[in-house]
Image 1 (cartoon, rainbow, N blue to C red):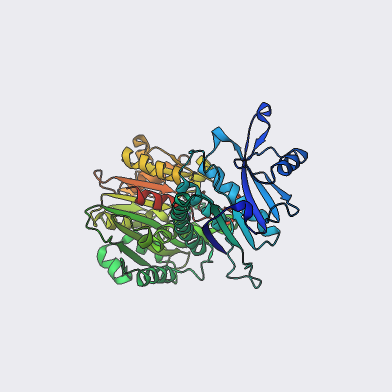
Image 2: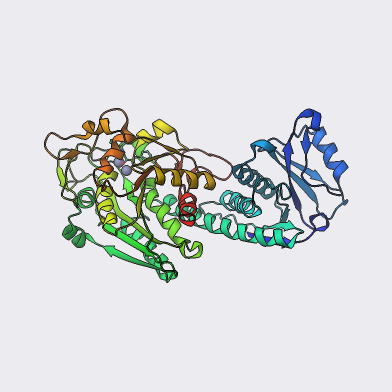
Length: 498
Ligand code: BES
Ligand code: ZN
Ligand code: ZN
């Protein structure tokens, strides 16, 4: 599939489908308006009214042109009401257009830029969203399919004004990078755990560093982790046949800077629950438990091209959580890298045990802030549903920056409190702290647990992505069942505007 921006007149362009976007208006204003006037005007209006096409968001209508213009058909995509328009509507509508065009087995599709003359959004942001709509909707995970889908379709975004063309090209390039990072993360998460072991995640990081001179990688094996006192990482890993690794990637910008951000990802390649074994239904999708690290790797895979003007550290501890004769037992006590002792009452609350050490290590890099991403608790999914990430932070400025970036990226995030009075729920009778809270508020007690390993002066945010990282059903036209690559676009947006 090829995407491009071309200067030209779409009314005169030969193609299989010409895509136009339409707003929904009140009845007295005529029902639907096409933002552009074309040679076919009468026909389109007639068919739209015959088919009762109202321009509602998500609606799509094909109209055959019968040789009146060189395009074989026009595809009208509804954007809903103009006053409700968001970039997300454009992303989704374009994805609907992609799907409709693909079902017709078309080869060349020409798209106009919606609301090009309306100054509602920057052309660059609009073409960025359109590109994501197409690329993310076109994704399939075909590694294990005999029949691979690969039709050649070219998408041409067309504008007449050279200034618009140049802005659109920039927007499309951005959209391509954001999509590439997201799809990279999707592939990692969709890959089953027997092909995505801790060592495989190490190789992925090394591969990224090999391709990008601005990125270096350090890998710490079991011996080094023992010397570092990473009791949590080692404790979780001890039941598995696969050795644990800590991976530390560093991106250095070409410009001199003192700004430094650390991104920490949960990287449990498979979470069986350990001796606190999960029921079969809950275990079925637990290859997703490295999605936090996958998002960090997704961001790193396009980092050099996004080229943020700050140093970025990507850190994760890759482990597998398995039951065995060597596995950690409920009741065992682990010592974290900062010497705090943890009573492990449930071996299925393993993410926080690996993160406690990883957070300690991340802070030693002296970053300006630390952001961790983790498929940490089922409780967060109960609280916010499957499509919203829970954000817990000790710093309001950082929270606002993350929520702002998420909004711009079209990803759903919502703040949850680090409620001090709930700290009593993770007090242990025999150690400094225990790894589970009570029956309720599980996302918050997990956040509070992590906070025990963060310097109060270090701006830190914890993103519980347990819901959105992996879709149990289709979410929208461009996010289908399976891994979503959630949070990659928010991270890139955040770094770009830091
Ligand atoms: N990896 C799971 C959390 C999870 C659940 C991720 C659903 C994605 C979808 C985590 O390690 C876990 O098992 N958490 C437990 C914690 C409990 C034992 C305190 C949970 O949420 O049940
Ligand atoms: Zn678990
Ligand atoms: Zn887990």
